Each structure stands twice: as C-alpha cells, then as structure tokens.
Amino acid sequence: MTFIEQMREATDRLATIAALDVEAAGMPASVRTLDDASVTTLLSDVAGIVQGWQKVQAVLTGVVAERSARSLGQTGLAAKGGFRTPTEMVQVLTGVTKGEAARTVKVGESLVGAAVGVAAGEGDAAAPDAPLPTPWHEPLRVALLDGRVTQAQYDVIFRGLGAPVVREGMDADAVAAAWSAAAEQLIDEASGYTVEGLRDQARTLRDLLDDEGAQERLRAAFDARSFRIWRGSDGLRHAAIVFDPEAGEWAESVVGAAMRPRRGGPRFVSEHERASADDLLNDPRTNEQLAYDLFVDMLRAGVSAEAKDVCGAREPGVRLIVVKDAVTGDEARRDSVGRLVAVGHTEDGRTTVDGAVIERALCLGGAVDVVVDSCGKPLDVGREERLFTPKQRLALAVRDGGCMWPGCDRPPSMCESHHIVPWSQGGRTDIDDGILLCRFHHLWLHFHGWAIERDGRDRFVLVPPPAPSGRVGADGRSGAIVLTSKSALRWLWDPPPDRVGWRTAPAA
Image 1: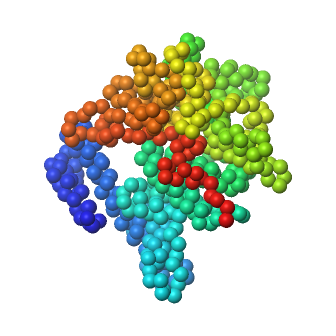
Image 2: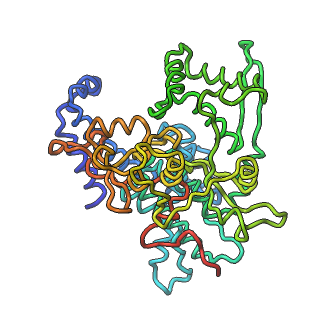
Image 3: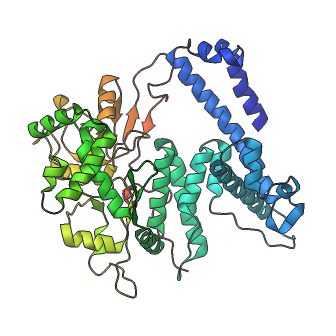
C-alpha cells in the first residue's frame, strides 16, 4: 500500500464520524457529544494522520535543506526565496516556532542523507564513486517512515545518542553497529516513555556506550554551574541557579522528600509521617510557596539543624547505581592523572555522574552491595514479611528504576511495591513477585481491573481489563503491554536477545 493510499484510508475512517461532518465553528460542541471510547479512538486516528503528514513535512524539509546548502550560495532554494537559512524558510512557511523548525530541519537532513547513503550502497559496482556506508541511524529513519516513532521521538533519540565516537583501538564498523543497536533498543521502548523520558534514556545510553566522553561532558556540566541574584523592575529580588548534575538531583530530592504527600507519595508510612502528611495537605500555601520556604529554611538552618527538622520525617538524598567492578578493584579504569573513568546513574537512570562524583559519594556515604543474577534477580525472602523490606526496595529500585507503568516518570522514592500475585492469595514477598508502581498507577491497577503477569523470569506484562468488542483499554491502549525497566543498568540483564554483548565494541 502506498503512502497516499494509507492516508486516504485513514481519512476515510474520519469521514464516517458524524460529529466531524459540521462546520469548523461547530466542531467543539459536536465532538463533545461523543462517548469516551469514540473520543479515544478518534484521537488515536487523528494522531496517526498527523504523524503521517509530519513524515512528508520532514522529508520536504530535508530536501529544502539539501537544496539550500551553503555551497550553493544565492542559487540555493532558501536564498532564492529571500530566506537566510532553510530553518527560517520552514518557520515562515509552516508557522511554527524557530525551535520546532530547527528540529524538523535536523530530522529532515538525517532522513534525506540516510536515504542517499542507502541508495548509493545499492548502486552499480562499476560506479566511479565508492558506495556510501549505511549510517548508524538507519534504524531510526526506517522506524519514522514506518510509523513506529514520531518525529519528536526520532529527534530526541538521534540527538541523545549523538554521533558514534571511535576511540583508539576500536573498530569503527563495530562502534557504528553498537550505536545502531542502541537506537533499535530505544525505538522498541519508545512507546513506554514520554518524549522527555526517552531523551533522558538516550543520553544515559550514550554515556554507557562512551564512558570517556561522558567524563568530559559531565565535567563541562559541572563547570557550567552558577548562581545569580538580581533586583527586578518590581523591586523584588530574583534568582537563577544552574545546577551541576549531582547537586541538581539532590535539590530535586530535597523538594521531593518535603512535598511527597502532595505529589502522590507512597501510602504505607509511619503514623508520624502520616500526621506530617496531613498537615502538609491542609497547608494553605501553594507548592511553589512551600518550596520557597523550604529553601529559605535550609539556608537559615545551615549545618546547625538536623535534616529532619527542615525536610520532615524522610531525609532526602541521592542514591547512585554503579557496577562494582567498574569503580573498585583492579578492573577500575583511571586516566593519566589518576581520576576514575566510570559513570554512575541515579535510580531512575535520568541523571549521569562521572568518576569523581562516584568516588566522593563512596567516601562520604559508603555503599550497599546488591548482587543480581543474569535476569536481574537480587534476593528472595519468601513469605516472612507482608511488606517489602528496605533492602528489597533498594533491589527493586536497581532493577525497575521507578514506576514501571508505560509513560510514567515517577522515581523509585515515589513508588510502592506491588505484589503481582496478591499476598492474600498466596503471593510471595520476593523480587520476582514484586514490581514498582507509583501510588496513582498502583491504585488504578487495583480499582480498574488491570493485572501484571510474569512467566518465570521473563518480562512483566501489563494486562488490561476485559473491554467490550472494538473498544480500547482505559489508558487508550488495547492488548497486553510488555513493561520496560527505567533503570540505567537494565541492558546488563535485558539485552536485545539477538545482540547479547552489543554494548562493547571489539578492538580493531
């Protein structure tokens, strides 16, 4: 089926919706009469059509960029139209922001460039020029044109992974293959993340693939830290802070620990925590005012106050996850001045830290060993405990990286441990039977008839409740959904089945 035939078929489905057969001005009132299932289905169909035309827009934009190359000067397509750059041309013709136009140009350039490379590789062997190699991001190009990723998802994966880095002693083809495999992994997982979450995962994976480059990027991020105070025209003082990665994670954990009850924190807490939570929920201040007062109290208290006096019953902190052999012992790598060459990650895999930060954390706070098998299973306490123990919670955080519900970005500290087989039905309080869910999705699962299943040590699967024929599940999906860990280390025990060991590019 051609592209136009696919789009015509999708548009014809919309033509059967009577609520859309009205003047544009009357459409809001008309669509409001649809039932929930129809709204969900219609939204999905329209999103597919929009995504389809975005493909055309991206390809056209790539052609515009190709025909507006700097080497063409005033004969370039954008210049002939009176535009300084192809981005400016796209911005004016499409009416989008400069940032959106720039993103579309980048996606279009990579699409058209990849297509040229593939076409060249299929050419006659007698051609005067050698065939161009297939680019590392070819899987992304195919996924976008097949409709498996959106333009925004393509962009964050492409930018997040960045160009392959070939260092001394590495085989360039093997490195490119590793980047391509990483792109395929992110494509497979894209539906389980928000665009922002997918961006963070792509950056984290890049740091795992290129730990030397990660040291450079993270040191540059540390050097970019700043704090500035100024008085505005209203006479009030304003401030702007640029955090280094570790301090930014710590600052978020401070606010998160103090605001947990308002953000849907876990329900299973002590009586003291419950009383504090009730006080916070009844507090008339806005979240922003509470965060401000917390910040000022911390400044005033300084080192003279205990953390619980300022932050409440749950002391904030940043928990880093590292591979032990990579940071201790003879296998740890160091640069020419003795600095540790390794990367660590927060529990949810969204923040990367370099070797210097890891060593300082080990010095200040020590470490807890979590030994996992090849499937990521850390430990098992059977039915001795009704609730998961603190050490098991740590192990779940290492394995799951946060709420496992598709698209949810809640970190482990905001999650509850769910028994996939209820305790009352003989379920075991062990890692194989437990999974992290945030409070909202934990309640949603129980209240709306969803279930999570697992066959042995295979992946967890989210099963929607039975629904009338032709209707989708409560979250807009239909059918079982394979759940994916958010942990930065999930590739250690969950590699692509046909590419075990792909993370390490062999030497030349």
